[in-house]
Image (tube, rainbow, N blue to C red):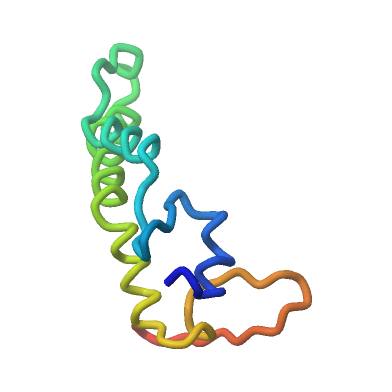
Length: 105
């Protein structure tokens, strides 16, 4: 995966790092996601805002757990299944030629 130009084009915009052919969370991001996944310690200031409380109590920790567990694996799977570099997720610079394929999948 280290030689894939499509992956290299998007890595600067992702919160993961490529080490030994695997995409991994850097330690600071991993610790931050673990902390978010635990939920807030105290929500005294949010008592008047039930939607905000629900967001910080349930939604944000769930999203953090999902990212922590699955984003690196999902990206690795994508690049392994993409085959050649023309099908992998990448960013095109101005005036770069490219092809966009869409499917129901």
